[in-house]
Length: 272
Image 1 (cartoon, one colour):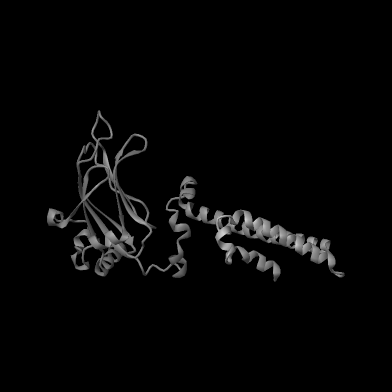
Image 2 (cartoon, rainbow, N blue to C red; image 1 turned 180 degrees about the vertical axis):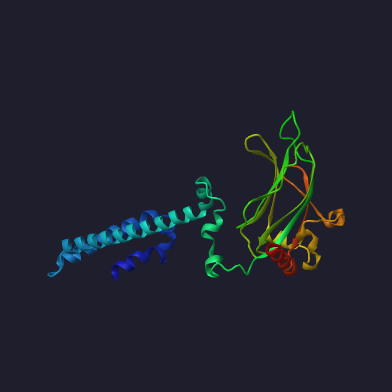
């Protein structure tokens, strides 16, 4: 009790005014005095010696260090697992695994037992691109479009040879869309085909919320798109959204949900 009172002295009047700016000097001195008092007190006791107390404190400190070591090892293991989980897609990409996101999934997949009810099919209709930069100085671009989004397999349009700075695609790609996915982004890349590989000309990235805002009502879906015979009215400029690409260019898109009737049409076509 007396030792605690000594530690409280610098905060009591009239000592507070002279000690508050010298606490870094006062407290080491008070601690040393308390240790001396503690040692003298133990020396006066018959059943407890100073050596017993000292070695007991050392033993407790050793147990504390062992516990801290185990905790730090556990935290390091969890941190390493988190790093591997964070960059698992890149690791699988290096190993040559396509669509690595579908291998492990995320928390929602495990929580819903990999149910597909939160997805609905959607069609991305690509009309044309304009204002593309040049990949080569001596020849025009051989343009194609690559679309990736979440668990969907990366999809590509056909290559339009010698398209140059603009290209009319008039193609549609279907994918599964989760409107509540706040992590994955729709990536649309405009590329130029090379003899070996390709060159990225421009890119567009959109979140699920942006796609949902641009998605048209379900009754706008034209069954002729499913059958593959697209009338010219489907390609009128008023039906498409003009979106800027990075670093340059524009793309004209439509986002149309695939209705249940259209899915039934697909099934009937597959049966025949």
